[in-house]
Length: 251
Ligand code: UDP
Image (cartoon, rainbow, N blue to C red; front, side, top):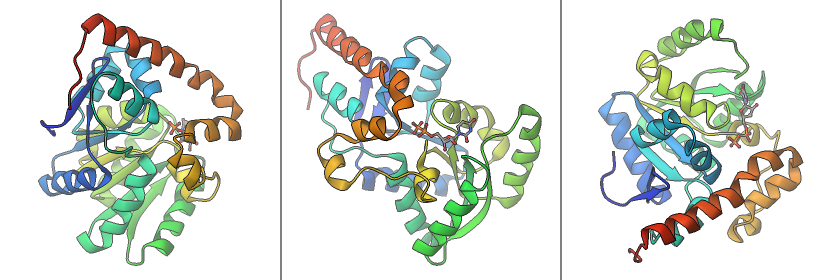
């Protein structure tokens, strides 16, 4: 766990890392070999964790928690923590897949609709020659299927497992099964496999630079409105927390 550069946002620990620092930390976690969990956290999940102590514990016990959403960067700043940049699931996924052939890492993709993880794997191999995708499985399984999925992943023996079941389901799943899986690093990556497989598009760069990726996602998937209703509530909690604690700015 990174001890320096941590932020406490409404009781949830977030590591104030850049993408490169996150990658360096994950490299050390792969080298360590013990099952580690990486969370790419957003404000909606922090908001859910306010009424879900198990979820809060999962976040606080993870080995790396990156600031995925602009809500976290905004909320952190209000509380006096400077975040250098967002570190999203898809950024980690593509940087780690670039690193993997050089490091000799094998990758397993779990989640999304049937066929999507497999297609995403083919796209990643095209983008990163030499990449070893040692297996994939869709994310629409029953509890009864879980032992077979765990056994398949154990046999494939990946160094990194990307789990795309949506947040916080993927965080809960990784936390529950990581010891049985025995994979050195498991990362929850939300809808990233859909993007890699070409099913969904990420916002254009200029939209991301303007910190409006959340609006782009809302416009392309209006059904996200219910989830995104958490954002103004998160903002209110941040403002209350700031004034309750009377925090002085930190660096
Ligand atoms: N998903 C899944 N199994 C489930 C529920 C969701 O594999 O039981 C997948 C879904 O197909 C999608 C991803 O999880 O690929 C969630 O994407 P979303 O964009 O909602 O994730 P977020 O990044 O917002 O958490």
